[in-house]
Length: 103
Ligand code: SF4
Ligand code: F3S
Image (cartoon, rainbow, N blue to C red; front, top):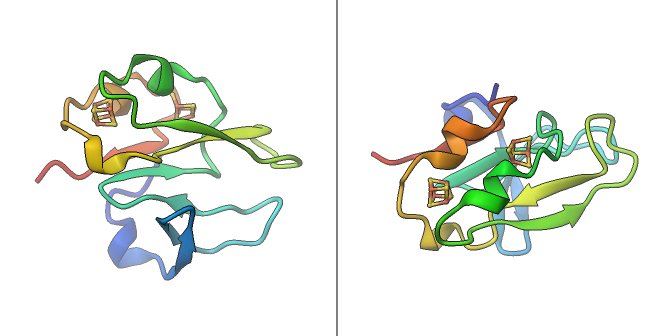
């Protein structure tokens, strides 16, 4: 699953759509972690969709990631500033691709 200490263990390599990106990034195979308060490891996400469908405040949007080995789309935590720390997405993801920093 996602490393909950990614902000210490990974390099901040820039921003995409206003969200922090944590490397290593080498597209299309390696896409890194996107977000900060709500962070999604794009290299783990298999596009299950349960997070996006069940988030009570609609934090996530789909983004296309053609030729990524795990899935051809990912959930971007586009509205991570709206997150209410319910932890549903963290608990529901079958591959533990999401970390929410509720502290
Ligand atoms: Fe949405 Fe809850 Fe996940 Fe925050 S913790 S992104 S509110 S499902
Ligand atoms: Fe991806 Fe997990 Fe959501 S696989 S689409 S982060 S439920």
